[in-house]
Amino acid sequence: MDRITTLDEFIIDKQMDFKHATGELSGLLRDIGVAAKIVNREVNRAGLVNILGLDGATNTTGDDVQKLDMFANDKLVEYLKNSGECCAIGSEELEGFIPLPTKSGKLAKYVVVVDPLDGSSNIDVNVSVGTIFGIYRRVSDPEGDVELADFLQSGTELVAAGYVLYGTSTILMYTTGNGVNGFTLDPSLGEFCLSHPDIKMPKSGDFYSVNQGYYLQFDLDMRRFIDHCSDSKRKLRYIGSMVSDVHRTMFTGGIFMYPNTRKNPQGKLRIVYECNPMAMVVEQAGGKAINTNLDRILEQEVKELHQKSPIILGSCDNVEELISFVKKYR
Ligand code: AHG
Image (cartoon, rainbow, N blue to C red; front, side, top):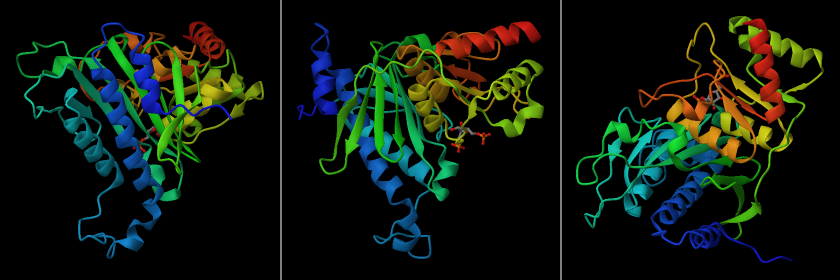
């Protein structure tokens, strides 16, 4: 059997490719990996929480039973705070970003954005959920306070991005802009081990993924494209958990869409901590990610931390096909 490469070994190995690397980004990625293992443990026992806790309000140690997305948020904040490599965090669960002063007083140069538990409405029914993360280099004065501008950078400025899928197995996928690698958690070792090196998405695929229940709320071009997918006997798959739907699309090929609807004219998914990190991963695996105006997701202007965007991503050929439909019907 080939020797196992753990996430930590892989990160350190990759760091050596960069002559001037200081190890800060590597440290940050490793801390995200540790936080993911803790979130994974809680997600796995989610169904037991009410059994282990007292009437659902407190757990065996007497603490309040937290909603899992808040738990995941708090764990990520805790680990990033201790890591000392991150000066602030922006999260779906937090209204504003929170600065993380380091114990040593050292000024960290990265900010991290996270959706701690994407698809959390699926937890109660045992469906896969995920964590999404992105890392930006701070752009504000390093001697001053962290600013909102540090979080409102376009996706092209991401230094690293990735996600963790808590599925039938737990897998962490990340990119630092040089391809995408996947690491499966080996529960017996308690380590993420390299299982999917240098992932390349199929150039086209037979699957389309969209909440077809909103069909009548979509724009005409989007409806025509969905009709075309259905007419050409493509397979519809929709879990309702972006990480799971995108992860499947990464391997089977095809297209994932969360377009604007009448109810959500800007779509539902958030640019900073959902669309941009997932778009970076998809592009790094050879796919494409655009919005319904056909602009590249990663180049969109970001004005607010919780700004939403319609998103379409997937295999190159499928996204190109959608683009030609939109051009024809708009
Ligand atoms: P939440 O974290 O509130 O469960 O939202 C999940 C997100 C995303 O993961 C998924 O693609 C989308 O919402 C599903 O939304 P619809 O139910 O509207 O299809």
